Each structure stands twice: as C-alpha cells, then as structure tokens.
Length: 356
Length: 247
Image (cartoon, rainbow over all chains, first blue to last red; front, side, top):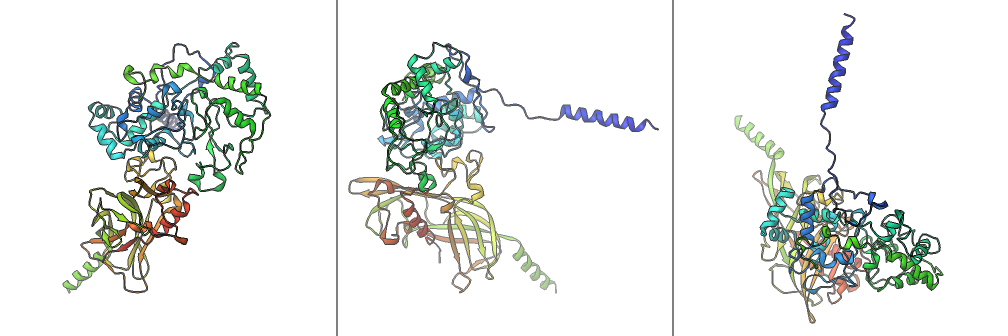
C-alpha cells in the first residue's frame, strides 16, 4: 500500500514527460533565402547580420523569384511603362541614376528623389518621412500613387490574373489569386534579398589593410570623429539611424517632410537619414535630389547649412579643410559594393539586361 | 385570451428580435442626383468632374425617442465608381430591433482601434486590398473623393484624401426635440435612405478660402500638412452636414 503513491507519482511523471516530448511546437522559420553569395564575396563582418523576416511573410525561393519578376515588370503600372526598377535601377544601387526626381506614369514627375534599396530589409522606417513600418506596406504607395504606377487594387489583380504565368505563380506561392496584398508581399520578399556588404570598407573591417586608400582612411577617421561628426546620424552597419532630421538644406522648405504627416511645426523639413552604403552610385542627393555631387553634400554640412529654426542640433559649421572634404568623399566612395550592383540574382530575370 | 397572448408575444418578439435594415445612399451634387461624366461648377466658378468616391462608415447607432442608442457593430466601405450606380446604393446592412427611432448617427472613418493595426494582416473592407490604405501615413483614408478640374490651362486631376484620427467625420442625423426626424423600422425590416451632397466639400470657409485647383498644392488635399490643413479643416467642417435623411 505504501508503494502506491510512488507508482502514481512515477506514472504522472512518465505521462508528463511523454506529453512534453510529443507536445506540438512551432516550427522554426526556414532560413532566409538571400541571394547566392557572389563569387567575390569574402566572409566579412556585416555578412553575419540576417535580414529580419516578418512572421506573416516567410521567405521562400519561389516567393523571392515571383517578387523579382514583379519588381522588373512594367505591367504593374497603369500605362504599362513603369516598374519598380524604373526608379530603382540595380546599376545605381537601386536608385534612379542621376535623376533628381523620378518620372511616373503618363510622364508625371514625382517630388522626391528615389532612395537606394541597398539593405532596405534592415530599415525600421520607410519613405522619406519614415512613416511606413514595413516593406509590405510601403510598396502599396508607389504601386497606387497616381504619379508613380497608379493602379487601383482591383485593376492590378485583374491584370495579373489575366497573365497565365502570374495566375499560376500566385496560386503556387500564396495559394490565392493575385491581389495588391500578395504583390506587395512578394516584392518585399525580393527586396529583403537586396543585401550589400562587400565594399572596400567592409573588406577593411574584415582585416584587409589594403582595402582602403590613404585618403579613405583619413576620411574614415574624420567620419567617426566629433570634427566630421557624420557618425551620430549615419550610424550602425548601414550608416543610418533611420530617424527624421532637419539638415538645414533650406530656410524655407517647399516640401515640408515629416510635417506633412504630423502637422507639427517642429517637424517641418525633417526627412529620414538615408543609408550611405553605395552612396557614390546614388547621386543626386538629399530628399529632392537638389545636390549633384557627394563633394557638394559634404560642403553643405561643412558650411553648417542654411539658417533654419528646426535644424538638427548637430548641424553647425565644421571647419573642414578642402583636403579633409576630399578625404571624406574618398571614404564615402569606399562604401561602394560593385558585387551588389552586378549580382545576377538581383538583376532582371531571364537575363534581359537593362532595366525598364 | 389566446389571441391576447399571441399579440403579446408578437410585440415582445418585435421588440427583441432584430429586423434587417439596409443603409442606402443617394449621391447628390446640390439637390440634383450625381451623374458621372457631367461637368459641375463650384461656388467659385471652377468646373470639375467627379471620378471616384469611397468612404468608410462605422460606429453606427440608431437613436430612440428617449435618447438611448441602439449601437451597431461593424464597419462598411461604400464605393462609387465611374459608370456605376449613384442612387439608392446599399452601403451597409444592419440588424436592429423594430420600432420607432428619432434618427441615427455614424462616423465616416475607421475607429481608432482598427485604424492603426497592421494593414497587411487585415481583411476587407480594411487591409491594403481596400484601396484605402495610406502607405506613407499609417492608417486609412476615411473619405476619398477624386475628380478632374477643367482649368483654362488644361485638365488636372485632384484628390481629397481625408484621414488620420483627427479627421474622422461625425454625422448626426437625429432630433429628439421635435418630431421632424422619424424612422420607423417594421418587424420585417426596411431601408434607411441617406442623401450625400458631395459638392458640399467645395463650399468656402472662413474669409472665403476655397479649394483653388489652380494651385498645384491644393490638388492633393490630404493629412495634416500645414500647407493644406486649413482647407482640410474647411472640407471636414462642410462634410459634417453633407449627409441628410432622404424624405
């Protein structure tokens, strides 16, 4: 009789262990399907980072392939002339190749400079105001804006459903017909593969002492010093804090930036800090593409910008010499990763070359 | 005796059981039915055509004669597109107890607790497929009116995209003081017909300010931008009286 409680305890323990063993657990998400490593890519510091993947949009090779196809397809626009890649060209690190502002459907001009998509999967805030929280939702903007691609959700869905290869691909990837939502999820999956970490600066970080020129090394010292003072905003692996700031570009801003969304006077002229990766490929600069060269941008900050009540507290005359300005430019140019802009996995599918 | 019980039960069930009611909308320009493709004129003499109207209706309640409300859950997206119907269009289905009401109230917009959820995970009538998600400014467009201005220099598209929690439009169509507003919902259900005068948006505001489409910045009216917030406030104020109960 005395042994009975022990037997029951043993049985309970056994059942508990079996239950623990067989209890259904969430399956860990599959590994990120990024682009295959480029032959010239060394294993370097920032390559260790993995792009955050939202739970409701797991990354699969088929979805990335569909997103890539959509990214380069002009049929996603009202007049069949504009694709995402029309303004985000791979050869310019997915920016608009020398244009201050981009041209949308029916020749309509936008009002802002198309930003690079380099490492865009790491961004916490999107658009120049930084008001969009994720790539899936950001993509709704250009796809539907009347001066960009200009399609209503119904029209986009009908148009893609009428293309048999798309109808089939959406069924296979999402288990449903094409829709604006599915399009944005596929494009976001592709955008998360736009990863760049093979610049001379990255190779220097990895231990290659020859990767940076003497001028770039001097520029790097300035960049991360209080004198150059670039690093407070252009911080972290992608050289951005993702925060909106007024850089004293104008005294009176024609485009009021974040204030357009918040209505607050103190937000007038605030735009998100852009990444500096591949910045030498993404001219012209600033939210409106009003500065043509990197050197002129550095000169703008060296002067301390224009008088502006909302100017960021860090904006002030820097007192850099002409040589120091050149050195900073040399460092910024050393953030260029040509293996990113030529990576075949990121170019138009089917080897069509060129972008729309 | 038996008949008395039957009448009693009928009265009780009529009170307790919900009657199906359709909320229908007639689009008007002034007092006239809206016709797609027709050229209209603002009070300031600017000529325009209408291309699209979409808006959310939420937080609907019918108001009883004693002031109590019968609140209706749910939210609907009303859509009016070129060449589609503009008169007697059903925009929402309600289930309310049969009886006498002194009007109704609702908001044009999305309730705050739904307005800021992740649009990627929401279903119609919300979500990105609604065509009402505001990509650059989290939340939904509540009232979306689009058209074309016929200007001397050529036609220009204009939009009014009213949204953000600040611009949720309250519509109050009840009157407890007089008997002017009477809505009778029989046990079998029925319809409540509303008129919406879309041209009300173009009425001038304080000091005569108006939506001057010759200015490019006023052809994109949206959000809280200080550039346009005065005129957005004028449109917001005007829209509160743009709905009326059809006789």
